[in-house]
Image 1 (cartoon, rainbow, N blue to C red):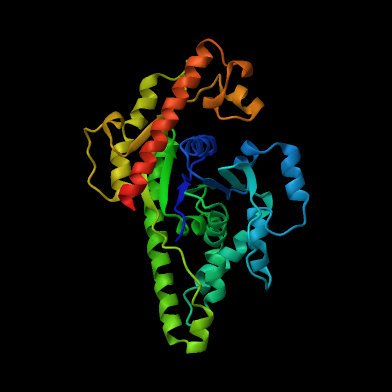
Image 2 (image 1 turned 135 degrees about the horizontal axis):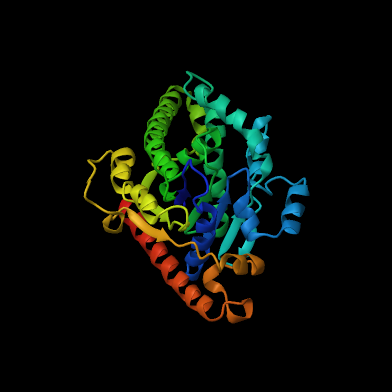
Length: 344
């Protein structure tokens, strides 16, 4: 049985994606779930959220296989196979597959494998490369008996992200209150559908190739599995805008209120509902607050903001904001869990 994979993705950056994953991971842990976080962004920001620089430096300086996501898949660039992940335990219910700035070096291998996986023969190796992230994440899920795997990726539509998305069961789309997030949403929906269709052709090609193999070769590949590539959109999250003195609130609201229609039309291929506001939209999972004054406190003690205490400096109005943050992230985690069960 495979572990469900949830990826947070928008090809527009600066929407608070990494912070969101970090806090949801801790909230799922508090709800009793076992969680694996996979940092498949070459910038490795999620790894930096969990670990201090000295620990990250030790991991990156190590020559051991499997210590980062890149070191798990790098052997495929030669003649070797995937290395099992050496997870970093964050606590007893939370583990991390560390990111690696070297991951960009795997982009070419993924790009080359994509067309080869539609060939007439010898497609096992290309498919092994394309499904490598899924294989590594499922190994991690088995090691920890995880209930969910949360994935952070970079803001682009490149080969690395394509391979992460074909490994993904569910997608949540974080958005900002601006034109650029809206345009990113318009690009994202068609891209996800295209990748889904193309991956299904490759899965079918593998089944046809397998059927034509000799019984001996079929036996050799009987345990080789491929991800479904369902990429089921669960909904979107909108980052609360920061009010600037030189920009009226209505300038932000103009973009925010267009999101429900664009999401339906571009991501779900549904008819837009022009009169529906974001506040009324069932596909809007939450509006994510900035918690500006809490962020530096949380980063200093390396905690989620909803676990800050008076000893950390969360007193007075900060203490109220901590309680609000806990309620907000708990509600969001519950909503995501319910939608995953409904849409699975």
